[in-house]
Structures are given as structure tokens and as C-alpha cells.
Image (cartoon, rainbow, N blue to C red):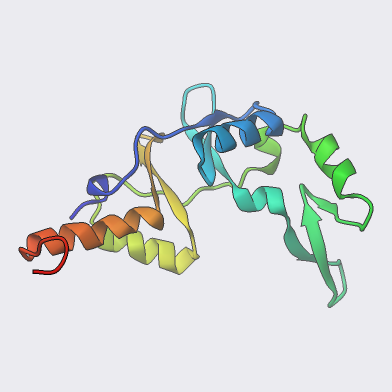
Amino acid sequence: MQVKDIMSQPVITVHEEASLEEVAKLMLQHDIGAVPVVDDDGRLVGIITESDFTGKERGFPFSVYRAPQVFGEWITPDGIERIYAAARARKAKEIMSAPVVTAREDEPVTALVERMTHYDLHRIPLGRDGVPVGMVTRHDLLKLMLDSARQLGRTEGPA
């Protein structure tokens, strides 16, 4: 089975100059957990995921202590609302992850799963000549269960 057999299409993308407010609105509107970021030519330049909006734990320079950061700013008990308000106008290219781990439509699903496992990814954009054409998420891998059952001649429900 190839990746194209389980990928989700069409892929929803955002331009690298889009504001984070636009990115969040698009992700909520389409109920998606990630959005590939593209340049003026539609080529993939990065990816933004839900985790970019929730923050990540980062180490303090020259210290063993770690603390949460969102959009590159340390989170303080009274500062989260200020950080989000200021971030609304920031550009997608400022917080996107790059380079992006990608796959091709014609690859075997096994190679995709190995890549997702190796990099601990929940989703991978699929590219054709550098342009996003689809997305595969862990949720899409559930389709393998249905296709495997069909190939074995199983039917839905008890016999």
C-alpha cells in the first residue's frame, strides 16, 4: 500500500506571511492539528502544529532548570494573556518549524510509519516537487485497519 492510499486531501496551507491569528482561525475552522507553511510559489517552507500554540519546556541557559515557553517567551503566572495578545500579529514564518520532515505519495506506508516513529511525529505533509499535496496523520493510519480487513475477506460486525 502506498501513502496516497491513506493521505488526507486537499491539504490546507497557510502563507508564511499569515498572522498567527489567521493561522489559529484556519486550524479551528477546518478542525486540523497542523498546517504546512508555503512561500509565494506554493513551496513548503515549514509547518505549524497545535503544540506551537501550547508552548514547550525549555532549559534556562547555563542551568539544569527548565520552564515553559510559548512563541519564544518565558511564561510567567501573570503573562500568558499578554504573550498571546502580542503574538496575534506575529507571522507564521516566525514560529514555524523548519525544515519539515516530508514524504512522497508514491512511498510505501511502511516507510512513512518508520519516519513518523523515528522522528516522533503525529503528522507528515506529502510533497510533490516541493509543493504540499496531502497530509498523513496518526489518525489516517486507522485506515490501514479497514483496508487490511477487506483484503482478508472480513466483513463488518459478527458473522
